[in-house]
Image (cartoon, rainbow, N blue to C red; front, side, top):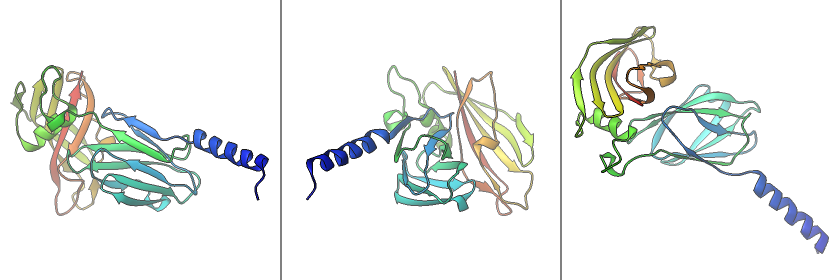
Length: 232
């Protein structure tokens, strides 16, 4: 039978464990890396705001399993992990970039919140959200107050990508670019990763988010459309 002293020791140990490891809530701003801590021998649950597809930089270092459409269970296979994870939102087309690291303070649960406007449309007094503008460009549905211009400006010409703008969408405080990315290496598979296609346009504002119609280019498809949002 456990003594009162033993019970107190166990209670203190459980309390310390509960308070020392806490869940993380992240408000993603569309530009920064999501910080996802992992620890050898433990699971990290990553909860995203929408269903997604995931792509790892080094998948041999990680065991990743879908718990449900929004939740990824991550367990490292080695003690030291430092790599990128790209998540492609199936609903919005948004590409979320994550930094998965064992150097970060461990948390068993990471919940990501993406600020959106209900229905993805204009709300009086609020303006168009980043996600709503991305969705509108992907659907080709111009929202009220947005001006569209045709363009053929070359935004990036550096292997393995060539990016040429097709349309410029502008509204108060925000701009979007619809462009076509073409692989300069048509015989190879080339992933569409925003971290590798950083197109800065200071005249339009700060790069906020990027999405694409396809996740990779290859011999069967050498080009696809990409959608970029800038804001001030």
